[in-house]
Amino acid sequence: MHHKLLAVAAAGLLALHGVGCGGGAPGAVEALAAERASATSGDSRGSPFASSRPGMGATLYDGGVMFRVWAPNAMKVWVKGDFNDWNPWKGELGNERNGNFSTDIDGASRWQKYRYVIQTRSGELIERADPRSARIENSTGSSIVHDPGAYAWQSGYDVPDRRDVVIYELHIGSFHDSPGFGPGTFASARDRLEHVRSLGVNLVQVMPVAEFAGDFSWGYNPAFPMAPESAYGTPEDLKNLIDVAHGLNVGVALDVVVNHFGPSDLSMWCFDGECFGKGGVYFYTDWRAETPWGATRPDYGRQEVRDYIRDMMMMWLHEYRADGLRVDGTKWVYSTDSGASIPEGYQILRSLNDEVHTTAPWKLMVAEDHTGEHITKSTYDGGAGFDSQWDASFSHQVRGALEAQNDADRDLYSVSNAITARYNGQPMQRVIYLESHDETANGKSRLAESIWPGNASGWAAKKRSTLGAAILFTSPGIPMLFQGEEMLEDGYFQAEDPLDWDKSVRFGGIIELYRQLIHLRRNWDNNTRGLRGDNVNVFHVNNSDKLMAYHRFDAGGPGDDVVVVANFSTYPRYDYVIGFPRCGMWQPRFNSDWSGYAGDFGNTPLYATDAWSEARDGLPCAGRVTVGPYSVVILSQ
Image (tube, rainbow, N blue to C red; front, side, top):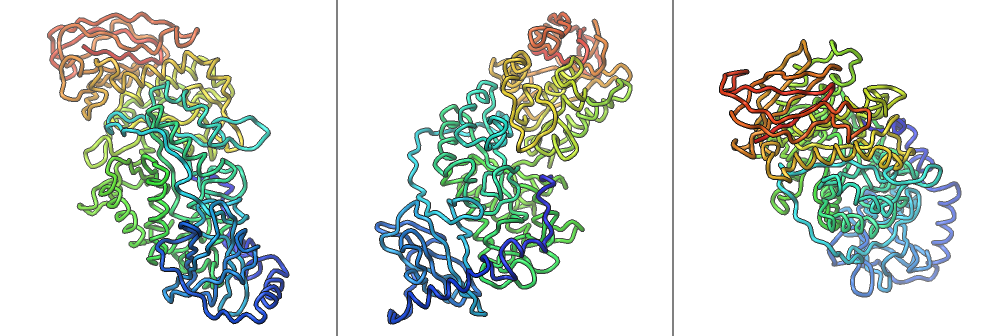
């Protein structure tokens, strides 16, 4: 699921934050204590007053900044930063007696750096960055006062009907970059959005962008879940990426992680000095703490932690104008590896989806769960309420038929099951794909590479990967591509290995094939409306000759009914008779064997089919079709 390098022993977490629960480098406590003694000698200011302003974290007001932090086991809290010459004793926070400490700092302003100094119950002084940092130097640096209104938005965006959505998953660090330097950035990704738009894609799903340890990562190790990754750019850079995408009529969904945090560079680890044997107030400290990535599962039973997660998600959806969220590994929110239940985790997912559906129902909420229908069942019916969820079984079943080295081993019944599956009777409750970050790493590789290892641009790799693409875009569900899939990217996905954009020129014909499939899927020419419909009938499966055909439709009729014929064998099929849902002339709309896509494709001829009145395959009419090797033909009236 996540990058294997992220797994860190829970015992190592303490070492990342200093000795024991204290935190800070050796000598830091003594230096702070001496500094405090010097700064406060003769000080008779008395106890500070807490702020009356709303909000958590660092919040701008006219003329200053309000700081509020949750530290229920702290004795005292100070804030130091650019605004007080980094002297914490000029910035004591008032105790609100509810676990929060706060104060107003007149003269503080946006983009100034700051850190908290906390006096623990034992009297120790520790330093922490703000867990609610909305902007940060880096994962081990200081927090930065964020101005949520600093960016001037230019573009609006209308989210398309769910049946019209085509997703493109991308990773900022590797989507557009040069090998050997830093990772790609929000700005460099923005510069390639035109490529995505030209495909016909209308929703980019961005792998996690919250601040993580180091500069290269998949992003599933958030250290500061509310701050954009500093190696990728500023909050304004991320907003500009989303704004430019909207100007191209492309939405942006963000991937978020709430099943664990970190596990490294966590300021929230033992945040106020109390560890309780594990990670302190932000985390479970019993058996529920354990996850596949360390003992860092948030304590969903604490209202403050639930508020933290809720505020993070709503920030991405509203301040950053994300058009949806993909919530990673939801099954680890409400259960452990052993299957033990965490009911409060399930409830937080339900409440978040209810809030989104109430306040912004057009935003797409997607889960990665892989455990069944409950995650996309409505909360009214006891489900978690997600709009859709990743369907990994589609990838496994279809890729199995494509990757088999011998035609005899291709299981078309498995492919049929992949095409017809749905959750709660709703095809759009599943996101279908052949590649994702999970399916192309961790011992697995890109589809074209796995078909022909070492020769992802060879004939068999091109033919069978594009056969898979045609199955993807003609099946019910929300289709998704992974970055570079359309240009035959080889090897396997790595955060440090950027896409080779030279392939967008070398394989321009293959990209055109994907473009035409997406246009057909979205009914751009108003003659394939059925590909957007909910209905499918796989009416012909010849597992011996490896040919199958299925009928896609919405309401049915001319311009709606679509027949898809797929040949999973290395031999062309000429004048093959199959059933048709209607008699009369059927026009060819797509032939994946066209030599315009690749010079070594066979260019098997494709003709209109005049279906006659004869019952065949449970349908009222019959007609002849010709299909090239490892090819798909799409016909409609």
